[in-house]
Length: 140
Image 1 (tube, one colour):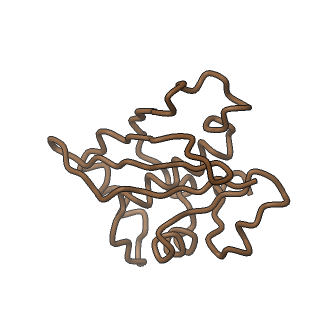
Image 2: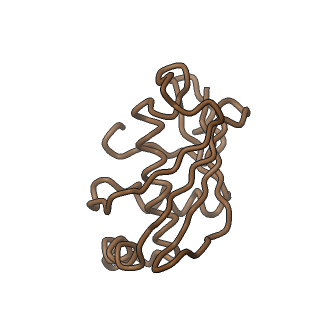
């Protein structure tokens, strides 16, 4: 069982960014998640966390990290969290993370290259075979 995360192009709102993510569970659309608003200053702080590494889109790195945590926590898996919206739409205002809360840069870059992030929901997942595996660093 896998969760596959895709994203829409970056949007802009007053004084910040808007990110929309689409989460599929075993190939079935489960959630559309709107991160609004991601203030410019907060996104810049996330970019600074990369230190010497270059991150072209820190809002995407931050957003994918939040999604990975929500999936690993069971928040986005309907069978484990019956409180999620019936229509699958969630609006979340993420808090500025610490470096330890972000996906490893290698996982982020792999997701960008493949235009998707695949997260295992169990040990028999094919995510690793697909080469787009990612997991939240605090849950690996």
